[in-house]
Image 1 (tube, rainbow, N blue to C red):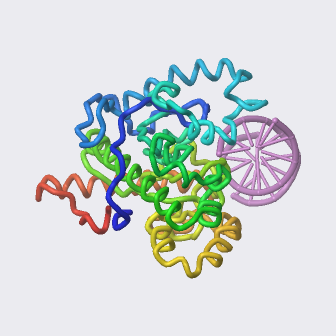
Image 2: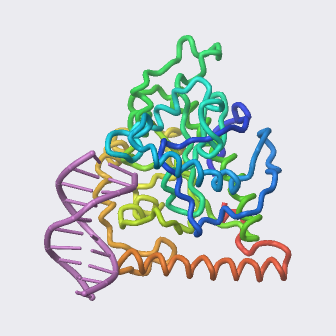
Length: 321
DNA sequence: GTTCTAGAAC
DNA sequence: GTTCTAGAAC
């Protein structure tokens, strides 16, 4: 996905991670399994298996939980709503954030673990600020104001065409790296790869524009409400696939309409609860969860059968990736 | 974004 | 009586 935009910028170098300062809550459902391998993915250097990091999170999270009132939490507990902005403005994220929170970093983007993943794999990609980095010669005259990085809407409205293309290309490239890491991990833990969605929320609740990279199983204990589920359906209009945004910036004649559509997208979250894979109506969330588990088990069985027979997955590249 | 909980739904 | 959702509070 997200190709056709431009040659990639810089290669990311691995890092340490942090999402917002929220306690990570990996659960037994999470596929990030016990196995620890070294990532073989091309680009970055010291890669470390996602699974290892998430497991480490457990100890990290209990420590954090026990010191809730401290710094990183806003009053009353829970992650701060501008945690992402705090990450984005760090001058040295790799040294500031633990690997349990930071997945990857490059000179102009970060990829972090979502603190409350809504699927087996769920990461956020965000542009760093300043963007481009001050070290970049171009930065002298092209630094957009921080407000332009609040969300997708401000990116589209407050940034000139060239700048927003740069930001989107960088984010898209980082998302692709994250996808590769996820696919590696899927193969190692389940023996097959499944669909990954990449896109923005029309109305995000955390400040600082971020791109979701989320596996389409939607199996996670943190997925608790209809709004959670609807907010990631690529067919509703609240979740905006990055490829669609890329089409927008190629033809920006209708930009105002598109931005207006973003602003009025909240009502879409009240759409009746149906399965995003087969569209069957679900009377409640627990039933959806059971239903999604069934989808996953069936898909895995079918893929593994196909792999055994043909040596390759059934789904074609264009269908899945 | 989450947590908490009243009261609707079963 | 128990499960589940949705809105207020954070």
